[in-house]
Image (cartoon, rainbow, N blue to C red; front, top):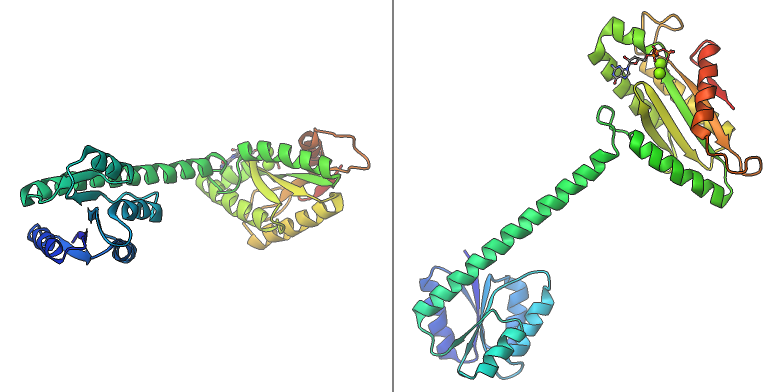
Amino acid sequence: MSKILIVDDSDTIRSVLAHAVRAMKFEAVLADCGEKALELFIAEQPSLVLLDVNMPGIDGYETARRIRAVAPEEWVPIIFLSASEDDQDLKRAIECGGDDYLVKPVSTVVLNAKMRALQRLDQMRRKLVEVSNDLTAANQRLETLSHQDGLTGIANRRAFDFLIERQFLEAVRRREPFSVVLCDVDHFKAYNDRYGHLAGDECLRQFATALARSCRRPTDIAARYGGEEFALLLPETPAAGALHVVEIAQSGISALAIAHEDSPTSKIVTFSAGIASYLPERDKASRDLTARADEALYRAKQMGRNRCVAV
Ligand code: GH3
Ligand code: MG
Ligand code: MG
């Protein structure tokens, strides 16, 4: 049930209002001064506040200001109840964060109607907040999807293109080595032909997971480059280090022992890899790392597959 915070220094008015509020099937929480009101506002989280203006200690205006300061993102309707009919008092009440201003004595019918109207606004506001939170979550999901490969869940080509550029520039700036590895599943067409496309997809999923696992550093990235080709981006890594990562990947993938009866080169699924490295002391700023890795990969294929060549 909704809680209404009633703030008034007069015992009589407080109990009249409490009676009216309870008759409307709300719970009444009572405060006899502004300080107490703030305390209860925080502790009880009411859905609406009925606020007297003239009180000993901090007055209603200051109480409203402090309530608004407690939760600037939130909105809890505040209705001022004042003895003054002066327009200036009403103006000030609204400026202090009030949403409505009623002159005492207030008829319960008017009070009821005003409370309903403000609650309706509050509900609409909550719905808007909900919709906006849903939109934020949906945008985050889209953002993730836009750089994630749908089949394997690792980075996609788009992410690869973006990251290689950034990591390469970073390597040049910091004068650190940087390696790119291209990996290609051996005789994968024959795998699809023998086991079917769905089994092929499952093979690629397992392959990607094993490849991603062989990237030990948080800055290493495994991406699906396209089809049955994958790429590794290895910052702060010269060719020898990249070779080491490829060896880990090779043992991870041979541990999967995915049967490939129709492969002319092995009884299980294997891959070939090409490594290209940027070395600050050797290269000016060669940007064709991917092309070089592709050449190396081609050579690994030529040399019989299931191996790695570095250029
Ligand atoms: P090589 O050892 O020279 O790399 O031979 P290969 O058969 O792996 O190379 P090729 O490029 O001739 O064939 C690649 C195959 O990969 C053909 C294509 O049908 C398959 N492939 C590409 N993407 C996918 C995919 O998303 N799912 C499945 N199941 N197969 C794919
Ligand atoms: Mg290929
Ligand atoms: Mg292949």
